[in-house]
Image 1: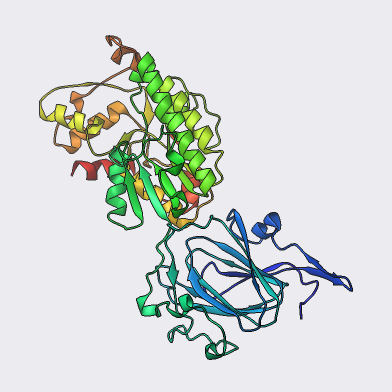
Image 2 (image 1 turned 180 degrees about the vertical axis):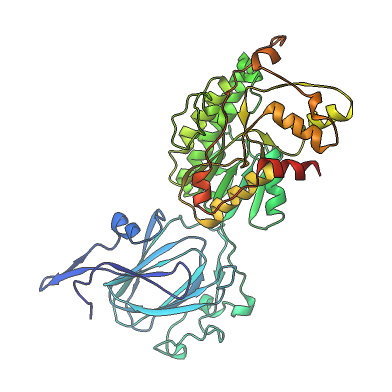
Length: 468
């Protein structure tokens, strides 16, 4: 008997992410009415905004109809329109809860959210039962599924009607026992720009994790009109965009301006479109160059952007595009040091070769090492931090480029007094080509990241470790 007028409520189960909902059903002598799926009310109770795209109905005319156990690579919202079922769910995802079982009865006053990779099965308890489910992907023959035998001894589901007395399809009868099940892996992570400095740091951080893929420009053309069909994007949970045009001075030329806009805006917009259409979290790396550097305090995430040059303008435009996606992290950083040629290695080389450099002393910020950026990105993703923009740099006292150069000299056993500080204008006075304007103040406030439990090393500590 359907229970009327229950308040809408959510109940956690023994399987992570599997949530039972009580649904208010309003009835009288004519029948009943309910809101079977109401996005605003249900997400307010903690239901993931899973973005259903297909609605399926399975009508069962006989008591004892038994189907399952199927784990598909998508989320489901399962309910009953008429009749009543005994439902059984088994966690078939990789991880510590693999094999966990939960059972309950569903009638029109109850529904259940079944996360991707949790095996779903049911047995009808009344005739003319209509079993309905919303899913957030279109059925595809190329999708990877896992199945479990209804009679698996490890799961030991206590079916109300013995399986020997009910009709089961030959396909369901042939499903493997739990020991033979291939677990559903987590949704994939795609690192774009995998050969760059940050891309290599992300490779080092994630290693050979089977659910992480790495793409270079040769592997994935963001300008291709076929980008939306380049992969089965619904299998991906996260795209980390580590690709960018970063030649700040060359961006001031005609060709450089074109290339900077293509990489930092047009390519980013293509990724944002893919992320939006497929419910993917997009991680995008931003820059202190979106600011003009005129504030006398560290920049916060909500400070208005005011870029000085073409590079900064393209980064600000890319940030604005990414911010339109529902699931995004914009990681704003500064003065990046990683694998390959960089300021620190240049200063160490000059010190070793006996060259006394002139270095800019009127730009102030903090160094940020790519392994710290990679670690910070993983923290945001794995901690479930609120979507949005986060500043992520080395911590500690701000320094000028000349201060850092002197520190490099000292750490490598050379006299820091060999470094002479000069103004930005003096440094570029003899330059022959276009020079991009630089923000004088590049210090970013790290409070929002710290509030999530994310920590970075001090820039000086990271520099000392980098130099060995």
